[in-house]
Length: 250
Ligand code: SF4
Ligand code: SF4
Image 1: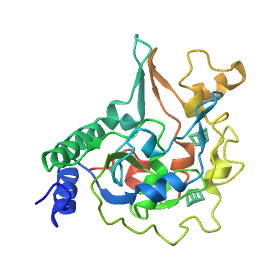
Image 2: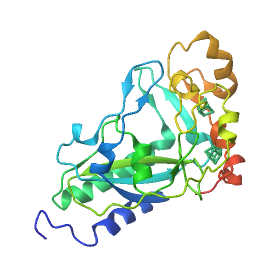
Image 3: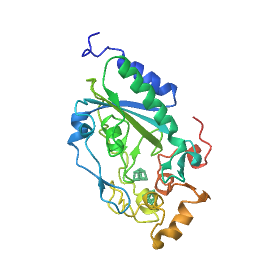
């Protein structure tokens, strides 16, 4: 292998590494396609926008995308550390998979790294064919509904991209729009980041008007630990029954 020839088994080795650590979905997106998408506003009341992959890695050509299912509400815990950092213990498998994939790619002589936190992972998952974009602004998979959590690794290895799904899995359904207690899905397919309770709950001092909604839909398990709102996901007809009952097994 020269440094610029992609070995034919690279994709299967990366997929195998991801699957071994719990990934239920795996695909490849083209960085050209990802960086051509419109930018999206993210973050509660702050002016943060998604960024292109090549801002962080100018030579990037492919994004390896993988999804791990949220098994139950324990995977939706958000922990506010005393340092001010916020962590998501249920998402740890994503970091481990990223680390393994980066290691394989670097050992093969490729550039590989984590995308910036401002890269829009849901768009990458859509481009990699892992689901269709839902009216709740999450990726919907026929098997896992809106419960896949995504990670990605970007690399200069030129890998053939997967094809996005051509079907819109939502069709005429509007269950999530009606289920959202905060009215954050009034423009279907585009969550309003200034209304969604998940963003509000990240603040030390959420707006007073939202506190009753947060108390009801984002219960605190301890002063620093809360369960993120999942109302729009629980309402989705693609949600597996086991996930609704919090008894999903991986
Ligand atoms: S997470 Fe909760 S507040 Fe945010 S869009 Fe879904 S239902 Fe609405
Ligand atoms: S609840 Fe219905 S409209 Fe919303 S994401 Fe699921 S299928 Fe789509």
